[in-house]
Length: 251
Image (cartoon, rainbow, N blue to C red; front, side, top):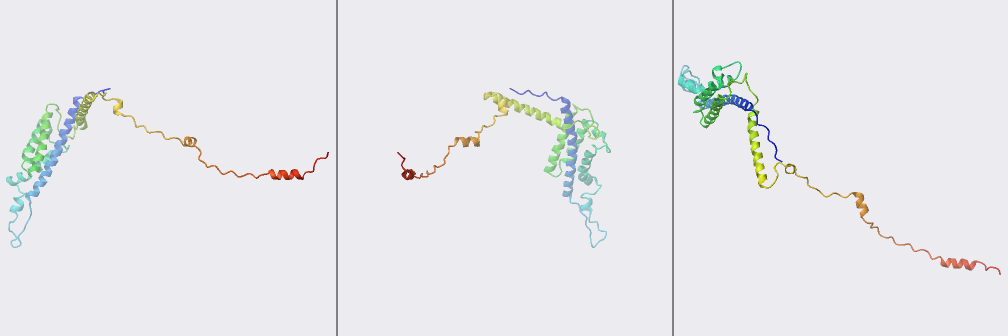
């Protein structure tokens, strides 16, 4: 007997799960961007040096100011863009540092992450920047998709939506239904009834019963050896002697 399928989940659960997924992907994207900035700082290798001979000799122009800590536009924006945009991607989801200019709707949220992908991910640290940029671009794509289904804010501190698991449970449910249909089709081809009790719960293997101890004792014949008979003494000679001793009867 074929099992009855559960009724499909409502679209609200799917949208709520997608909303929560998009918000948390924004948080993860900001974290990855900060990690990318730390890796970029190691590539810059900023260091301080001094000249023992000349106390006022400027020897840190290239190693410190031109490397990382400088307000020069060519140095500052190149070195600090991943840090600034990564921190903003994290702080916009906190209640103290609200940024409604980026989180008031999903369209602005998507454009923000598209800018993070282009200006703070791609081009930094080779393949690592490409991987982080691809994840941030996926976050922006989900945000643009949610423009059609959700009008709420895109931050986490007030509207978190329902848990994420209904969104993934929706896919798992459909995948399970597909597996059930495939199993039913294979069972029909093999001439079996899909979903039968015998198929799901096969009978247990029967083992021969162990005979009881008393039955063994009853069925087993006695094997005691016959003892040799003790020869009985011959008493006929003694009886004859006693008869001879008796006096003859009087006439």
